[in-house]
Length: 223
Image (tube, rainbow, N blue to C red):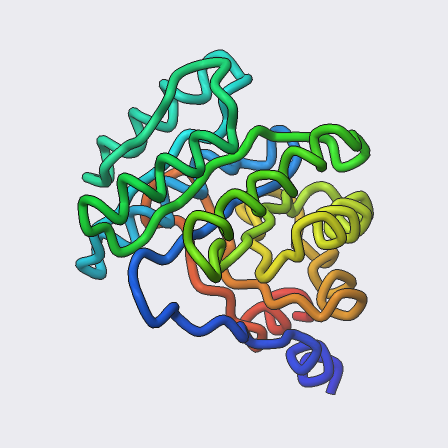
């Protein structure tokens, strides 16, 4: 009964694919949750589905972030867009959409700098990126994914709350579920915010991002 009750708290994704291409996916989260590798895995999935994919380096502050994302993009076979370290992240977003429209990409995954959810100026920057995307392409971003570390525990709740207030999160990606954590905090996230969990990260390999299944998760949590 507990397993059934648990499985029922997870909403399914409500986001429909946009009528016209490209689909713009904004990826946000705090430092160290695994955003870069998650984007690589999402790009890999999109490529496997036959979608022309562009990965855009919107994290222009962390020294190795652009290089790291570029390496991952090359491994997946996705195209890569960058304006270099120190560039305005909103300008990166704008020009990445320009590139995707020009070159006929099906989907754009836009990385953003990891930021503490308590830093007001950085959260304002995310809002600016979202405004710029909407101005460039009506309806964009079509999905906003918040990457949450399964080992974070209750702090993930406050992260979700503040990111959701800032940029209206559509889905959660739960990473590092291969560690000791069982990721029970997603139950609290689902109950409190009604946000669907779209994927879970189970390791470092490209294939280690799996679609979330509420029934399977409930069985693993209550065994």
